[in-house]
Length: 631
Image (tube, rainbow, N blue to C red; front, side):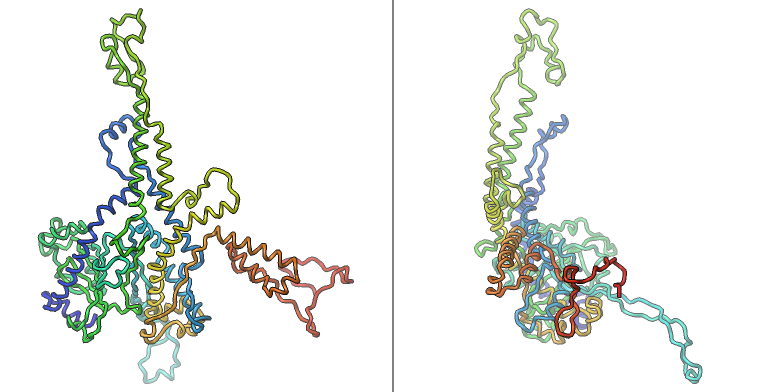
């Protein structure tokens, strides 16, 4: 923030332009919240479906007291969602690098490509990206909306350290006020964090310009997310210089909260539970981060008349605490959205959990009805003559059913009590549930092959490979869609951020001895050169089973060529390169470590070899590891 902006934000009462800007930001986010909150009920149900959550009723409480099984929800959504997430995660992480950089031109090959690949791999490790990816994929499968946010985080600390002072000869010290040799303290800046920062934003807390369809959300006027912080955390942010004017933040008033509470999951900022006196600072504040497209001159933020993306922080919808230009080389919103099926004709299509929920409810009902019927049949139903049977011993579930003293024994017990035989209509419920589960797999595309289960019956290797490929085809489409729309743009943003903002000191720690030579290839003095960058990342959706088939086919070809030297000579193929490719497909890399060292050359240009015993040579002593060769 410039000193002028900081001065304006520090004022107790903001000027007219800042207040106009605040009203614009709050209006945009509230409009989006009104649309997004219509999905919350369905999302809540999808989450409960995934977690198999249900509220116990009176029958469950009775069964619990008797230590009998309660009604349950069959967790089919859990199995389906986790199978899809596992498939996608393994598809993206099967190689050493999630983001495998591909040069768009010959000038980008060579050392520059290697350096960029090293940096983007470091960013993946630094951000704990694998864990964030799993969470985003889970959100996508349950809500059909996974949101990831990429920003740059730089943090340093000034520390004191002792340095050795060199000894200075006495004759040079004459007339100079110099310290004697020894130790002295100096202050220096130590970088604690310097790299990309990746967050997974809950779909409940993300808002975009809903006047655009979701598949075209980047063309909207804004994107935002909100979270709640303790007031003392805001003071810490103010000391770090990221927020200004924290002391003037006020809780929501009752009127504003009555409108807002219907569309937010942040309950701790409710004004009913906030501070009562001005000196109380133990309360929660809602911070809304808005990335808005504006003309800075319209709000006196700068002299620029071009439309730019600025980032604002609004506290409790009543005060702006920060205002900065985005200053990113990609010049896009820093959010990336993962969806299963982008569709321009719907705002938000059904997720996997929502899709299978009706089938899961029917299967759950069938299973619970079966359990209830079995419990009833186990308990038994009796026709009883109360004149001769002690009903109390029957209803209490005692081991013995007592007869009354006046019961005549010459008629037999069957005359007083008889078990009623009934037909159980739930006998076929298990078969019906199995049929519905097969139907669910057809609908979702996540079937038994993708779950690692082998179908009954005999299959040949070719049939099994075809079944696996068919099972994965629909999920590979989802993987490609998620990559193209979400992950690849995010990787590009991470690389561009690093090329613009990474410090030389951090770069040297990463690259080591070649850092100074590589710095000019990686870093650009003018960030404008990064705009419109054409570098991109490749996604390889080939499954391990498919790679095994490719390796087997290539191995058969190598065997054929090796046994026919004339055919090999006519094809001009490199057998060594083919063998390396076979091992790479099977997961064995760096095959060069098995190569033999080069043989010494004799003066006529041929390779020197040691003759064998049959060739008239002498017997060579065995070589013991760790001992020098005999002369």
